Image 1 (cartoon, chains in turn blue, orange):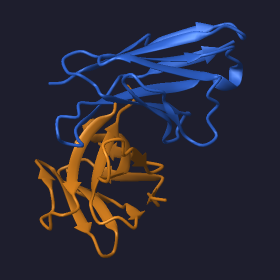
Image 2 (tube, each protein chain N blue to C red):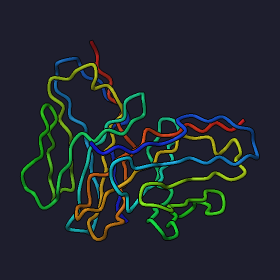
Image 3 (tube, one colour):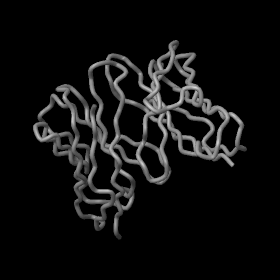
Length: 117
Length: 116
């Protein structure tokens, strides 16, 4: 079946550094990708929607300059957390959809656990 | 705006028994999709079952079935013959069907414990 690969699965870094998370669709072309954030024991909150070749659409309250999203190809989207601080520590999940005339399925990556010291 | 509400933060069920997880939603759209996702401790998001709003028949997938009440905007999940591997966080989710970028909106989740 369709697979979405997310890398890295876990990253620990110092406060003030920037961290890039990659989301790849391995066997389909993902015209639309979604980035979610999940705090411990909470639900998934959508951060932004990205379409290949265009600017991402951010949800209200999400800082565009803090969370940079690039969807440069049909198989890769990246989320860069710039100047990360401890409050950015969270679980980040990407999701991709192959728009082949159907609005589903939507495939999820395995997530990235980000810990900022 | 659409909302999804799961009123049961946690539930427990004896192994081999049946359990029902509740979900209500609010929308002004007539065409949409509803989902139940399972998130085990590994934190993978696993699609359990999907229901198209235009279908009157309730979706079923092996031991999992839904009770979709469109007028009441209710979408409950029934798990029959509960197994230890069913222990997880379950999220009810909604997706509109107006355009291709329609996003999935998740409820807050219900943590399901299976008692041996």
